Picture (spheres, rainbow, N blue to C red):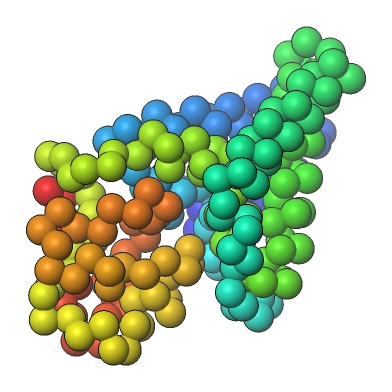
Length: 210
């Protein structure tokens, strides 16, 4: 239940601003890990991602994520906007440990609320489709298979008829596109959660390291 870490963070850092700087881990961690594991952090470690999956998903209509939020232009805009807002908050709160911690806390709170709103309008992981750290992680992800890279593999016997893997994918991707591909599914936004593997009705998908 990783989402409890998010809840505990928001409560504790509100009263003890210095604790807010811990959020730096969730800014550096996913990008650093992406170089050899892709967006693995987003699907298996991120407390906010867990919150969207376990809590927001219960009240979400699970509608299609708007295509424009996945566009390169929009994602670059959000990246610049979020970091600009971060800079403004730093100026307002000051460069003390408490001020920096409060800035991190404010950004996490606001973006989480935005994610929840989008989740109850569209799909739980809508925010994750253009999250600045997710975008940087996607850009840092390998574009070609490499040794030790965790990936989804789809057997050539997949007929792509049920598309169950796409229906259960929290990022609304299409793993079946990798049918018979020895390199596996290389979409940089795949968060390696394994739901497509678990949801395959005939068990012809697997997640393994190359």
